[in-house]
Length: 263
Image 1 (cartoon, one colour):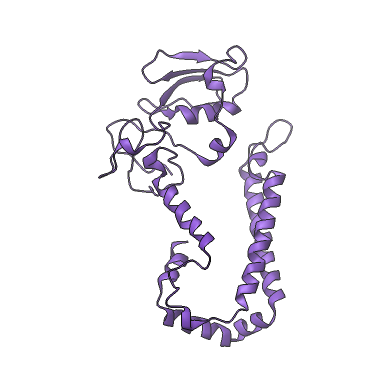
Image 2 (cartoon, one colour; image 1 turned 60 degrees about the vertical axis):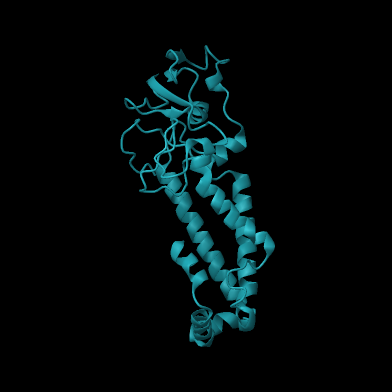
């Protein structure tokens, strides 16, 4: 992805040489004259990728006693599939359209670093928000932190100049330690490590009614609960659906110790 984005900053004359060479070449000239061939190739690649993802999901999914893949409903819900194919077809159609348009090199240089449409500015803004999310407390998964040893949880931060005070929510600071789980369902924390309360409540959605979980929130006394006998406990009130899908928080490492990459 990064190498693809680097091409956005290439000098215009280099890009022009590549495009001219592609359009005058044997394969490029054939594809320009046959847009349907481009559409068929793109459709075939999309179908192949979809088959591979489904196959990997079937292989990696947990099979219950009835032979149903438990993870399928999380990955390939019908609504998600419809949106995926609709978006893919729109992208392919737009690709074919742009592929055949002549390139106006007279204005390329002055517009090289400007979005083609103002609405496209939302994408770098979302990218910036995603990068800021660990510091403002929204999420720690899928952020720009791989191999950086960054930690921002439990009222601690090892960032050079971004303090804890920039948080807009306290999800990362509300820590809970899972002490035991019988007969399983939620993995007990290693000594010193914790989950966030937000993430713990998300995990409890998939816990069976007969599972007993003992946890300690902050410095409070340990509590043992199960959905069958303690349905009113706050731990069984999950975060709103959109929050659960958009904001993912990793396990909190031990305090005052090096924070390894947790991706």
